[in-house]
Image 1 (cartoon, rainbow, N blue to C red):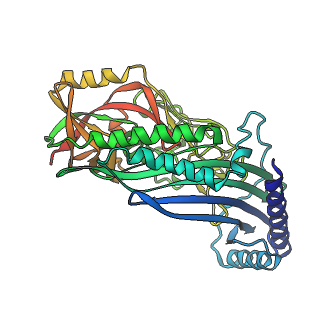
Image 2: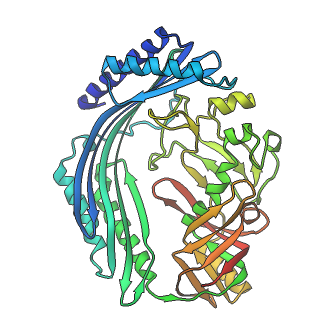
Image 3: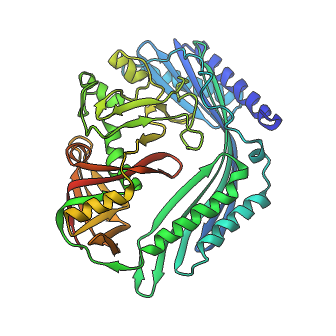
Length: 463
């Protein structure tokens, strides 16, 4: 670890240890501190021009305490002993009038495995110059405005370094350093009277050496996709096959599915499945879903979670068979299992449950074959790239607008369609109605990964 972050590390650890000591002396049976340090510089874009430059540097600390079966929590953005003592006392006070719950727990964590992700910190990003960041921003803007038909609404280039720390009074001590450069664009295409909907993307890398080329490549592809939609037409209404590209798969289907894989949902008995459903086929046998926190090119990469529990790749659904749920200590205690390292959140909030980097595994079919198969079955069909709508997490029913959608006729793309509604059910879409999965996959916004899916019995209402 470089010397600049060594200073911040020492300050963060010292403050966390003080906070822990204050909480125990104030009467906590057991206490946990989540702390972070972050340094970010951001150059923003608005209306095709530089809008602002900002910098953020600071510490954040949160203390969670248990007194019997009662829990209290408080946080601050200071390392001053007086403030740390105050929030320790506040957490104890909150615990005193909070309802008891037998599943609240703070546990001693195991050591992080030796094969977990290392070297998330690129020293070259710690001391990167503002001029270099400006140069990267110019690259982003340059690609965005090359074609005057693209209208840049907003965007940014942000560089950050961070420390994440979890301590508890049982002996847990986990620390991780990270650095990344991230960029984003939002815009639309305009040509005469034709206007596309707004589209958006973001991406990040942890290596300064890779940033320039990836900024250019990603921005170029994004603008090209937006401008493809300037040829606008009308869709028709039907019920049948629809192609969901990776972003749409994640937005429409996997986001809703993940609710039912949340251990707290299982503990509260509000999901579709229970522990008894493990090792039982629940979805299409072609479908495999994993969560992998060890992928260094993804934003959710981490060697431990919000409670200090070491992470590891986890199989959730294997060839349609339910294997595991995502658990933090609360869910694990309620279900009489062990945490899977899925406590999420930061110093300013209590732990929740969330996956790190969901990955829907590739199929065996070239993507072109999905389009060919759809064309063989029906003269025209919809291809969905993005989605804006609602999903019922309990029933699995979804309904909303297919955004950035394409209308295909006789196996050929015709145009972009607006105001087209789609509806269906995620369990049927990922079950009996799943027709084919592409062998090509795409990582969306440097996080989740999915192939393209061909799904039958989707209701399409043309506009």
